[in-house]
Amino acid sequence: MNGDNQLRFYLKKEAIVDVYLPHLESYDKRINVFYGGAGSGKSYFVTQKLIFKFLKDPGRKGLVIRKVQNTLRDSIFAEFIKMLSAWQLLDKCRVNKSHLEIELPNGSTFLFKGMDDPEKIKSISDISDIVIEEATELNEADFSQLRKRLRSSKPFNQIHLMFNPVSKSNWVYKTWFAEDSVVPENTMILHTTYKDNNFLKQAYIDDLESDKLTNYELYEIYALGKFASLDKLVYTNVSIEDFDYREILKSDKDIEAYFGLDFGYTADPTAFVATLLDKKNKKIYIFDEFYERGLLNNEIANEIIKRGYRKEKILADSAEPKSIAELKRLGLDRVVGAKKGQGSILNGIQYIQQHEVIVHSSCVNAIEEFKNYSWMKDKKGVYINKPTDDYNHLLDALRYALSITHNIGKVKLLDRRKLGI
Image (cartoon, rainbow, N blue to C red; front, side, top):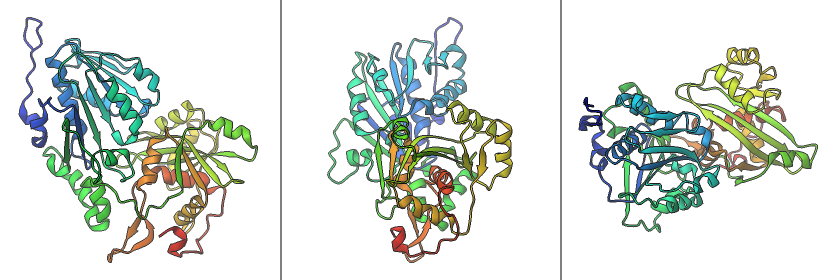
């Protein structure tokens, strides 16, 4: 900045992870796919690139997307705010935290929207750039609609997608990575991992690499960013639909709602799930969720109350009695610890496997976990009756929620075939 009110901004190349530097001012590809493992800095770089691009060209309009609107504030929106603050630009911007909008000093703007209300997307015109965070949460129809919205008179219109690979059933794999996929010339694809990010702290690297010894398959997927194989998933009885849970409740007085909570904080997210159980027709409906890291107990309580579940009985992880007691003090009088017996994980899995599981399309984290929760292998590469300890936070909450409906004692039947292995 200088004293004549003209904005002059310089970005040192040392602030950019080396592998991304060639892409900072690369505008020739309309579609830019950044994917790979955890800690690779994909979202961080795309945030840098878009802010830098918009500062150089007044009047650009960017649309920043996630599948669900209420996941934006604490993820990619926070990333933009953090970046602008680090660059000492935040106090020169107009930030609307209610509508999730940022206007840069030169008039360029970023609008943060969820695809769970596509009609609002259709009303936005003159979009020059689109950023899609966690692109695997969307579906192919969502992406098709967004591509049609990119038609600004500004030069260098681009879409940037960021994601960690999930299962090969996801639309991103079929679009750009399957053997029969045809990648257009206007597409750039870059795979990165934590090994490319020279800014990572050693403690984070050590944590990622710890899976090399205990679960190499998980290390390949989570740390190295490889797509998961579809075989040996724990649950193969799952479908994704749009439904009104209130109508389902009205349809049969014997259908009941159940709620589960799995505690997390830094490494793992806190996961809450709301579900219906139709015992007669052996169906489980998952209709609401939240999934977030860094939540204190009062924030967990506020989120549950805000969603209207204050008076519901909630089955939480009994390993945290202190947190359960605090949630009670904060107004969730009916939260209790889920009973755990020897073999309760396999028992809960078996129970859920015996039902048709229908997940509402808005529950993107539950969908991702169902598509990636798999059985472990032993040293000989043989699958064993032990699930991986990942992609299981909402699924653990689901087990807790439903544990009240069936016997959680020791599993008597450990035949792997009965578990789908």
